[in-house]
Length: 300
Image (cartoon, rainbow, N blue to C red):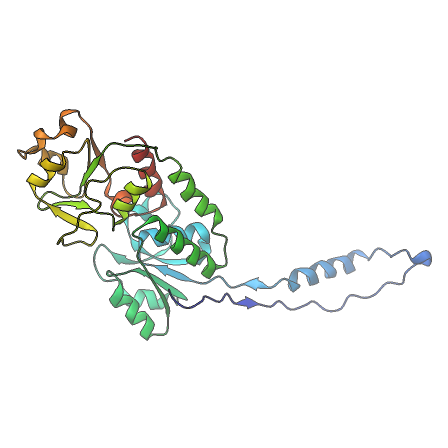
């Protein structure tokens, strides 16, 4: 966690002194003349200090969404994500990265941000460079609902805003979890067959929804943290009652249907196969993606 964010206050100047009016007899306060009342109003307004909103560049769609929700005026730079192009909430905000390319350092520096937020393992090089330039950075790793809450609370503290409305949305999302659910296997790719264990956002999401994840406890080598590689024999042995196929590559479900093991599974024989978007279940993506996934899992 980075050092405490201090919100700067700019003090206003008081307008000149208001001429005093004599009090009439019996201690009844006189009503100021219109001009005096106007000066008094101006003086009260000027006495309220203006708040300098921190300027933030978010390099992930999720943190950009959280910042915009907590304090829209704070967000000055965003990644070029398809999720952020939907609607007009992020219209006019500088795009500082595209796809898997390194963020544009010149664009970021030109925005004169007070804080740059990036994902652990993906933006380390950029954040290190920002630190060298004296710009505050924050590295996030949202791999669980607990991490999502902690990140939201931290950002709210740095912005001087209230996180409770957003935290209430998270609670409402999780409140949709059923008491029981069928044993489930999640597949995110075919070559190799990959499935999330409990040390991933997807695995924690299933646990929060009381969905028995058949690979939750499995460990093994995988190109991605929080995921395990399965053999076709392992899939057959697990024989899930429900299958979730995440569309992370072109028509993954159709490809899986071509494999010999597919038709032998209980889930395929009872048509208990569900397709989920990549954003929301594998990658949190954004607040709307997370909430949509809650709705889908609630009806598994």
